[in-house]
Structures are given as C-alpha cells and as structure tokens.
Length: 364
Image (cartoon, rainbow, N blue to C red; front, side, top):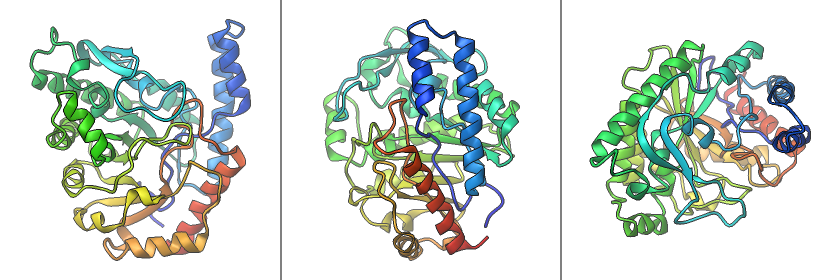
C-alpha cells in the first residue's frame, strides 16, 4: 500500500450529517443555539467522524465537510465579488436545489478561506488530513457569461485572471495552515460530456467545445505557484444531490484530454453505474498520473461485492497498470447538508469495503 497520497483506499470527502448536527443546525437557525454552541456540536461530530475513518484503516481523513451547507458554495461565497442567485438551466430532480454563484464584483481572496476548519481537522487527525475545495470552473459553469458582471468584467480573460489569482492566494493560506493534500472538486468535465448540458450551454451563449480547455487552463493557472510539497488531486462526477444526478453520459475523449492536461497528480473519476461507460478513456491518462476509480456508489445503501469490485479493478488495469490506480466511492455521501438516501451504518460499511478491497488487491 502506498504511504503518500493518493492512497489505495480513498474517499471523496463528505459524510452524512449525524442527527444531532441536523438538530443543532435547525436550532441555530431559529436562534435557539449560539454560533459557539453550534461549533461545539460540529467539533464533537467531526472528532467522531475522524476517529471512525481511522478505525476503518483509511490513511486519509476529512472532516466530512460537516461544517458546510454545500460542497462548493461555502468556499466560493467567501471570495470577494461572489454572490448567490437562484439556479438556472438544467437542475436536479429534487427540491431545495442549491443556489448558484454569480459574479457581482472583482473576484479576489482577501484573507484565509477554509483554514480554520482545516486546522481543527489537522489537530485531531493521525492519518493524512485532506481538504476539499471547489475548482475555479464552479464560478462559471452554472451561470456562464450571463452570471458574470459585464461592468466589472467586459473581458472574460480578466475574470479568469482574477479567479486564478484568488485561488493562488487561497491555496497559499491553506498550505500555510499545514495542508499537504488538497482536492479540487470539479463537476464541469463530467457535465461537459453530456449532450443535453452542452446544448443548454450553447443556448445560453457559451461555447461548450471551448469550455473544457478554458476550465483546464483555469486550474493550471490557479496551481501555477503551488508549493512542491502540496499534492493536488481532482474529483469529477455527474452530480450528487440527495442521491440524484444531473449528467448521464460516458466520458468524451476531447473533454478527458482537457481534464488530463491539468497539473494535478490524481483524478477521482466516477464509474459506479452504466452512465459512466467503460474504462477505455483511461488509455488517455498521462504516465505520471493516477486515477482513483469511483466504483462504490454513495447514492444507495446496497453494499458492493468485494469480488465484483476486484474484478472491475482488473478490467481497468487493462488500460492503466494497477500501480497507478486506487479505489474510492464515486462521490461524497453528502455533497450538501441534506445527504444522500442511505444510513450512516451503510456509509461506514461502504468505506470499510473500500479498505477491504484495496488490501485484497494491493496488499498492506
């Protein structure tokens, strides 16, 4: 088993919010619980989640994103110039859909973002702590050009330059807080493989054929000055909101090529259903990169067979050697505070199964 990230047994990051945390959040919104009291509940839940991850044998731990409402917005709305608006375009088949980011001013990072939550995680973890943040494309994908102020950005090149600079500043703060394993969550590459989503973007005035390279370049510029001891991975999926999804197409070669051009060490890719297609796109993986195969679904509680997972890893190894593969669930268990439709026990059994199969396949 590898001793540096990405590890053979991985997970994307988010975990189901425990009932006591849901209750505390509801009380805080009613004014019946102070911010300090809510933080105490969050701290207890995170300590428990980290202890459980380590007890399962995971070499990587997260705080489960338990302090967040949404996987992306809690980070993005801390950047200057970013607002929130009702979502437009294709939506999930569920109620209470998260809002989308809009650009209402010049984008910049005025101070540390997500460093306090990470510092707490680092202080209690024995395993490698991982921080997850949304990729730069998440400021553009949903609203496109229409959601970016023309007053502040008559030229989109200026927008992308500011976004990259904001991310470089945020990453510098994150690294200074002790983070050595960072994950960029980026649904854009999977979404851009779906013809319906591409058509929607085209109708909105954007060029879906150009966006994969635009988004890849945004990541590369954001990571331009990253510290040498910071491992960066990327996660992409087809959407994960209350066990529903948005995109439903196999990986497109041109989109995959753009994604694989990003300056990250590993790609967490979704392959938990027929929507993802076959493993043939792995042929395009550069020789210095790793793919973490998302073979275990977080959208239901049904536990995958160890034998089936091992067989699927063997199938993937026809395209990429096993030493450049790893295993994880296809996404988080709760990309938003609502969570997916499975129990906490089912969640932990799935993560235990990931560890079990990784040991079976790679040893350790």
